[in-house]
Image (cartoon, rainbow, N blue to C red; front, top):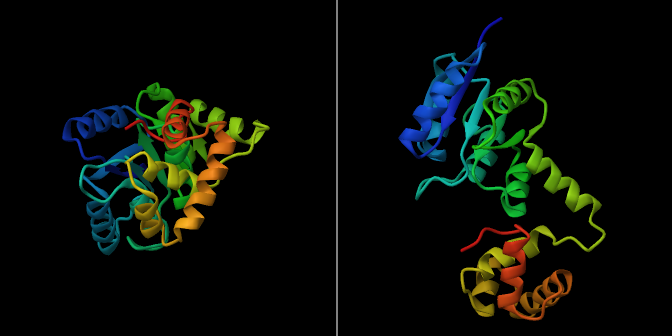
Length: 218
């Protein structure tokens, strides 16, 4: 049986070295290329496909400095921009907010793991994702199940997006411009967000969303 050929994508060289060493201990897994951001990952995929040496899995970080982020790169990879058929993408990150998880899944990621997971969990996730299965860290699976089982109204994707921007200090006018909607629509979204979070102002909404790990803390 041939090794699973992996492209490792992370902006920190030390982290990449550590992950490469860990993956080297996994039977049947081989890191064949590395990239420091999403754009470099797409270039590597294209290069390897041109050589007739495609990868079977992309192990992708989410936040990579000023370079292309993992969610954007995942969407492009799954759309075939690095070559077809596109390889599955397994997210490996430190972030576990609802916004990050949902964005990655919506972009087409096959799995979502946390960097502090035991090596055996990561090994199983690599094997599962490479074979076309879904691989979720237990904490991530629990959060997704919690959203499904929670009887309180869940925030929509647009409401989560608005909350993330709200946390940066944007005004209603700036939010409307960023999201290509009217200020009246922004206000309507805010009313719905406040009601769902049980708050009555921006500061409380941001605090509640951060505490519930819907968005990242600023």
